Each structure stands twice: as C-alpha cells, then as structure tokens.
Length: 128
Image 1 (tube, one colour):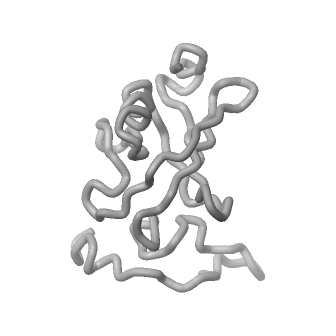
Image 2 (cartoon, one colour):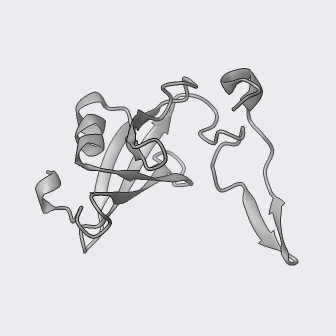
Image 3 (cartoon, helix red, strand yellow):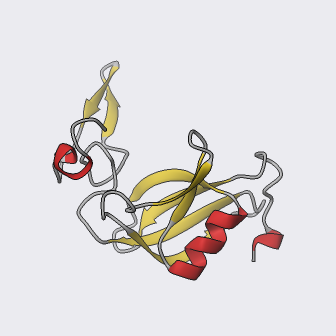
C-alpha cells in the first residue's frame, strides 16, 4: 500500500489529515512515515511519527483518547492522506477540545470558538 505514496517529498513523511468519520469535522493534522501507516492499518489505531521525539506514537497511548481507523484516502499526488476515524473519547486535542482546530481568526485575533470537552490536566497531568 505504501509503495504508491510519495514519502520522499517530505523527507520520509506524509501529511495525514484526520477527520471525524461520523461528522466530517477535521480533528487534527499529523505526519506518518511508512511504519506509522503500516501500524495504523494493522492495529486499527491511528498512529503518527512524532517529528519532535523522532518516534512513532499512537494517538491515545497516554490519554486513552484513541482514534479508531475507519478509512484512508490519498490525494492525486500521493503525498497526503485523509484519515477518517472514530473517536473513543470526547476530544483529541491535548488542550481539552474535541478538535485541534478550536480557534477562529476574528477581528485581528484568534478566538476560542468552542468549549473544552474534557479536563486535560486530569488526563495528562498538570505538567503536560
């Protein structure tokens, strides 16, 4: 499967846009290398490559807020993925929101436009 994708364009990574399979809402954007894509497919849990930690991480491994894979599509260039997933908990954002896209540009500033759906300190600890 990964042979038809262009991992070379971004130094071995592919952009992965994660969408809520039920609502269509964009939840987050991450990066996958070949191993992350293969682990996502084999386990059914969306897995990324962390650029800062230089290792694989499965969304939910520390929070319990997993993303269960429903489908994967690629764009016409084979250099980006659209991952549709089912949430196991109310939010995916480590700041406590349903989506990482909870701020909207209005009147020259970023405004939080949705409420938190969980307490991130209770999930990750105060030192996140």
